[in-house]
Length: 65
Image (cartoon, rainbow, N blue to C red):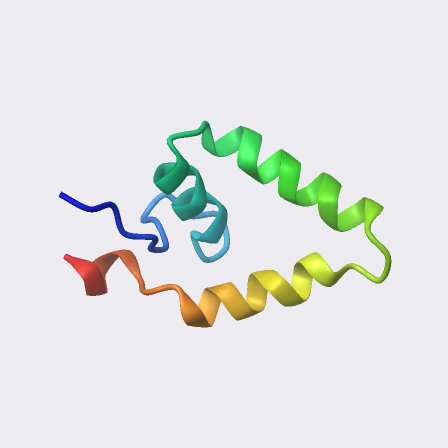
């Protein structure tokens, strides 16, 4: 069975980081901390823009089931 990249039901805001963590088989906390650090240390906070785009592009957990 193929894995699908989708937003997770384990969400803080929209489930994007948790969905990426589930897809990659990583701990959700590690992905969230990495996302925050990457967003803070990159110029102009493009991480926020990427998060909003992924929020609309990634299918919701309930849509895939």
